[in-house]
Length: 139
Figure 1: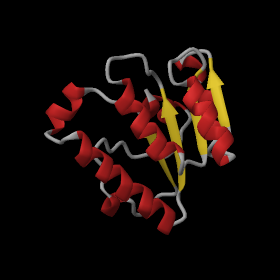
Figure 2: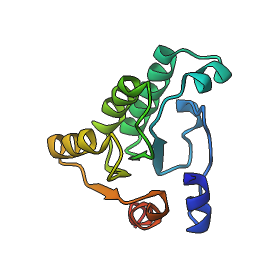
Figure 3: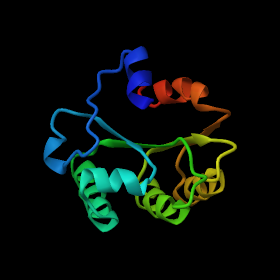
Figure 4: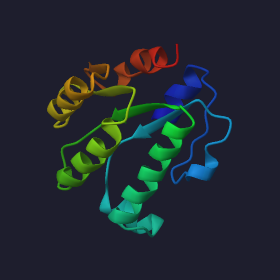
């Protein structure tokens, strides 16, 4: 979804589902689409702890290189909510901008992260409404 929005907005982007810190050359912004599915972890052949470590390294590299970090949450009402919340706290505390769905189960945690970290937050009505705040993150 985010790759399609990026393409529609003509934002030069690279889609890298399993990016490593070494992949962060010649970029200005990292967009994390925060979510968790156990099937996805199995297909990628990684554990939740390995995924958290990978994300942590990306965030460290982003800080070192002064890259912008954008966190987008498209869902959040499933059986692995605690894992999504853990990832959201990891990423959200270091984000420069947060975007989420107003009616998702994650709106309250996004509000909390935004207030605690003085991070701009936009909550939208639906996935189709993400384009405008997403574009504004790159202005």
